[in-house]
Each structure stands twice: as C-alpha cells, then as structure tokens.
Length: 104
Image (cartoon, rainbow, N blue to C red; front, side, top):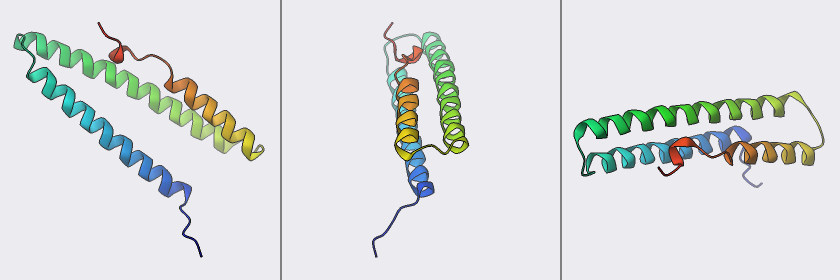
C-alpha cells in the first residue's frame, strides 16, 4: 500500500518551510544592516521601516491565504475548476509588487 500524504501534512510542511525561509531572510537582513557602513541612527531607522513594510506584507499575505482557504471550503465545484481558481488567486496575490522589495 502506498504512503499517502494528507493535505494537513502538506500544509504543515509548507508552513514550516515558509517560516524557516522568512526567519532566515530576517536574520540576513538584520546582519546586513548591522554591517552596513552608516550611522547607527540611520540603520535603526531603516530597520524600523523594513520591519513595518514586512509586517504590512505579511498581513496582506495572511489575508490572501485566509481568503483562499475560505473560498476553497465554501464551494464544491469540479476539482479542476477549484484548483485552477485557487492557483489564479494565489498567483495574483503573489505577483503584486511589495514595497519592501522595491529598490530605492
């Protein structure tokens, strides 16, 4: 009998992977800022601004994910339609430019 992975296991694994990636990105950004050749006041200001923008982005992603989960549990359409609609919504949400990713 083949080992089947449930949707909950897939979601938990994805959540863990994304969390680890984001933690690494934050640590890397902080280390880069600390070693940047500029005044401490400017560095702290940049860190606050980056944190604010990142928080805003995470809030947007959380809302988009919640909306996707809610919409996928509401309707029971044909499997191809639901999956396609979900992928389109996810791609649309992820393709928006993020303020903290724009070069200044």
